Image 1: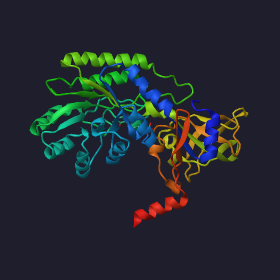
Image 2: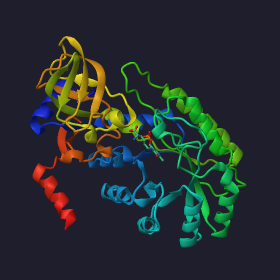
Image 3: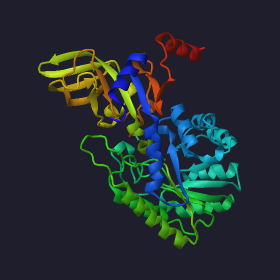
Image 4: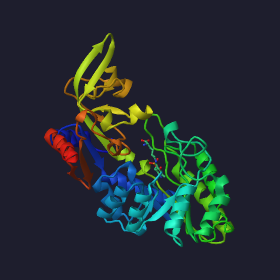
Amino acid sequence: MHLDKKILMGLAKKYGTPLYVYNGDLIVKRYRELYDFIDFPSLKILYAMKANFNFHILSLLERENAFLDTVSPAEVLMAFKAGYTPDRILYTANNMTDEEMYFVKELGVLFNIDSRTRLERYGKAFPGDEVCLRFNPDVMAGFHEKVMTGGAITKFGILPGDLDGVLEIVKRYDLTVVGLHEHTGSGLYDENKVYESMKNLLSIASPGNFPSLRFIDFGGGFAVPYRPDDTKINYEKFGNNLKAIFKEYCSEYGRDLELYFEPGKYIVAESGYLLMEANTVKDNRGRLIVGTNSGFPQLIRPTFYGAYHQVVNLTNPLGDSQTYDVCGNICETGDVFAKQRELPEVREGDLLAIQNAGAYCYSMGGVYNLRAMPAEVFCFEGKAELSRRRLSNNELVENILRECK
Ligand code: LLP
């Protein structure tokens, strides 16, 4: 574990559970190592803030001079609060309304447009402007069908076959295409699929089609290990291969372009723990059930994707191993964090830690069953501070009633 068990136990005691804890030092390490792996002079890493919009994490990466991939007006506003300027933000909303388009345009960020009809509306509204275009890479990859963003099953991007129509709109509204974008999926374990996506996008990125490009953005999706036996991709080799593909393309294009990637998971997934207390242990005709004081609205990945997250019994690490279903406190049968998992004996009162809770856990959360989201603690350079507190039950109810007025 990258944070000491004693520290986690101390934080659980101080702030109560359920509790999210993030390790800022690991986030910085992961962010910086991407620049080592993909050692390309004009590389820009745009953190996909949808993975975790915790304010301390955003500010930490701001101090690292990171750029951002954003997907909603409020994400852009939040980014500004954390000190990012518009020139460090790309806006990649999906299925946006005209109202959203006008609002975000006022904020001064570059739009990454992902449909022909939106490009048409954008061109009409802002002729002569600069844009980035999102294409479907025509490759299906990712750790789960729900997060594959290429190929025919997906709602994302412009199909490469629609290129002529797109170029016609660009010309009609005198738009300057400064960037091209694709995102293949999340949790890309097969490196060859990434190379294939890159090549598919680059095959249409000629100076004849797009003479004014400044950058190519190949999205996010870098995989991280979740299971104990998952091996990490050899990122050095992977980075070298990415670089080689891009270098070759730049020489064909006739000048060096900027190379963008937009990882979320890679930067923050491993940094987070969700701490929870086991409060009920049940023997259901031989099936052992552990009930905890969290639930799927607070960490939805196992329920939503069948995703695997390691569970650690912090307070009884040497207990005899038993097989458990680790469940939450929500009134749904699918409220299970881990099915048939071997753990050191779990007793009522034990403190459990769910690993890899830094990406798409807090940020995908909600208040189903009217239970407030856990507080978040941010650890950095030997200090731990409360980053966001948990609403009390009364505050949660009052907030909802306030919205009704
Ligand atoms: N860029 C775009 C356009 C994206 O749609 C995404 C993720 C990313 C970058 C960042 O992908 P990452 O590097 O984090 O894999 N909720 C899912 C992941 C789906 C994210 C959707 N888009 C999960 O919990 O695994």
